[in-house]
Length: 161
Image (tube, rainbow, N blue to C red; front, side, top):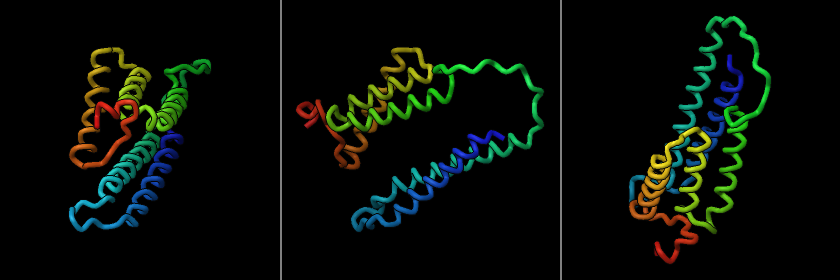
């Protein structure tokens, strides 16, 4: 069994369960049928489902007969190593949260998405630029215009408002 996948899945189920439980304290919205707990509870449910699926897959791998041992490669850290990518991603998310308010949602998200795509091996600049700008603007439009929730404008405040 891939113990790391099983443990990460269990952590995901626990975090999702805790988040889902916390959404029960959110006040009900009398105007709209979808209250402030709707999206967080959906995300928490998705996290719990995908984490449970990861646990099931890890358990199913344990039931498979073991493959004959091949010669082990020497240990070295590189961006191809999942542990290094996980640390870099964690640091990138931390940097995202630190510069979100002063820089603003749109520039921060575009830079973050570009960096994450590069980290994951996407090497087509036009695709990277179009995806990061398109996803960022789509999210901004949904939150700002449809849900009427303000995202940090940062350096673009004079342009956006």
